[in-house]
Structure formats: C-alpha cells, structure tokens
Length: 342
Image (tube, rainbow, N blue to C red; front, side, top):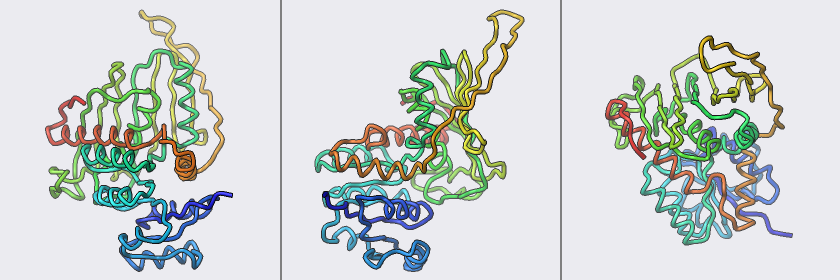
C-alpha cells in the first residue's frame, strides 16, 4: 500500500480553508501542517475544521517547508507572494499546487515552469473552472461541432465583492472566463484589450499603475477571428456568473446561478437574406453530474504526482499563458483600451 502524500497548506483565508477541507477528506493525502502568518487565523481554522492534533499550525513558512518528510505544498496566499513560495518549494523538490494567478509576470511563470521540470516535480495551478463538471461537459459540445461555425462569445461575472487588494478585478475574475474560453476553443487570443475604472483602490501599485480596477470590460480576438467580450465587477449587486458562445446553429450558455446551469439554445435564421425569420428556438438543458470542482483539482494534483505525469489541464505552461494574456490586458488598460498583440 502506497504511503499517503505528506502535504502542507499555505494561506488560510477563504480559499485556503476550502483546500484544507478537501485534502483532509482525500484518501492518499496526509495534511501535516497548515500555515498562516496570523495566529488568530490559524486558531479559527483549527476550530472550524476540528483539525486533528497531528496537523501542525505554523506561522513560519520556511519552518513548514523544512518539516521532515514533507512532499507537497498547496499555496493560497496573496498573488504577489506566489513566485517566492513556489520557487522555494520547487528548490526543495516539493510538488506544488498554487492558487491562480500563478505569478504576476510571464518571466516568473516561465522560470517556475522550467524549475518544476528540472526538479521533476508537479506544478499545478488551481484554475478551478477547468475542472468544473459543467465546463468539461460543455467541451463535448464544441468537439461535436453542435454550434456550427462560431460567431462570438460574451460573459458577465459580477457581485458585491469579495474585493481583493493584491490584484484587480481583471486578474481576479476575467481570468476564469478566459481560461474556459481557451479550453473550449482550443486556442488562445491573438489580441486583447481592456478598459475599466478604479473607485475603491485608485492608488498606483507596482504592476497596476492606474490602481486596482473594480469594474472592467475585456475584448479578446482569437486567431480564428472569434471574438469575446467580458464584463467583470466587484461593485455590482446584480450577481452574475454567465458565459455564452454563439454559433450559426445555436448558443451554449453556462449560467452558474440558473437551475439548469448548462443550456444549449438551438435555433438559427431560416435564410441569409431578408426577411431574417428565426426557426423555433429550443432550449435544451444538458444534464451534468455534480461534484465540487475544487475536490476534482485536489484529486487531479494527487494523480499527477502518483503517475509522475504533468497535467494536461492546468500545468505551469497553461497558467503562464493566462498570465501573458492578463499582462496584455493590464497594458491595454493603461493605454486607454487599445488592442495589444500577444
């Protein structure tokens, strides 16, 4: 019988707590430590999850990485800390699962991806939606070409918070829809543009010279000439989690807040000349088995380690590509929304 993977979780905020919960429930993993710089956060999590005494609570990440027999770490700390933590872990020959974005620069992402390969360790980035059962089921619609020639895409991801202070709404929210579109289309944008406003945190920061935008719009142009427009906001009480792709034979919509979260709206225009009369539009809910996406992430991480196989879904190269797109969006935002080539 294979010994369980000895793992530590770094960062115990909202997402870090979910990681701890999932890894505690995953056979084949032994959580040996939870790490956070704030002792009160440690105490609160230990009470909430009733952690066993075998799980050490530490405030020093360096001490945690030196624990005897440690094999892997899961990182859910602010984005600016990812590079140094991931690098330190890989240099100690530890496998790494990290929250998105992997880094705040393409160069750092490339360095970490190469470092993981050099040490023959798995580097998986938690782009959770790529493991969502609905997103995986939707991929089949594209593989079967059920929409016909694709025309355009659209998304809205809005809510009142949670507001981050380490990255802006584009890096926090738009990254999800970009990752899903890239996965469905099997291509990455050739050009990208963004514009938005920063009300809550307008102060300039090292990467974000115009402050952290609370609301933003994104335009993506793919090599196939498919285009998508995304809207994201931390300041909108109208909560939306909707992504759609329009084709010549229908529209596919992933709406997390709907009773049927994945719907294929079949229908087309009867002719290409006036009058443009639509055929009967038939909404077809696509049934998908449930399951927590983050649990799938954790299981996938363990499987990659056990099989010594780099992830085909969300390895460092995929994460670095997304950082490149986000970097272009930041550049466009700072230049008044001009298109930036990738």
